[in-house]
Length: 133
Figure (cartoon, helix red, strand yellow):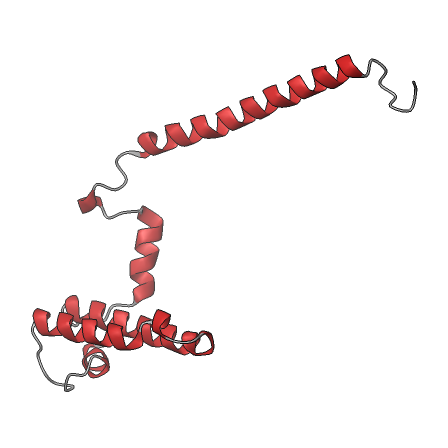
């Protein structure tokens, strides 16, 4: 989306130069008008697409009107996680270790419970064939 389309979508004239505060207030006004939660279920898809366009227009004008496609931004976030300025990609072990402990603990406890259940059933029914007395 280019800057002229973004300005028109947010309600500004095509060749105007709105300040960041004007852009923000226009964005908030448009969001309140077109938020998908305000519409009935059969109108939501149209409202969602309009809401996404408004968000893309806001992002475009906040970035200085450069041509920016949202897929590039999203692919960067998906590829790298949080931007490095916000502390992302530094603490992988802090995230991975508890996750691995949860997974291993689940398997260990599951195996322990299955073993206990098998032993209990073996004590109650000494024969492996359930059809024999």
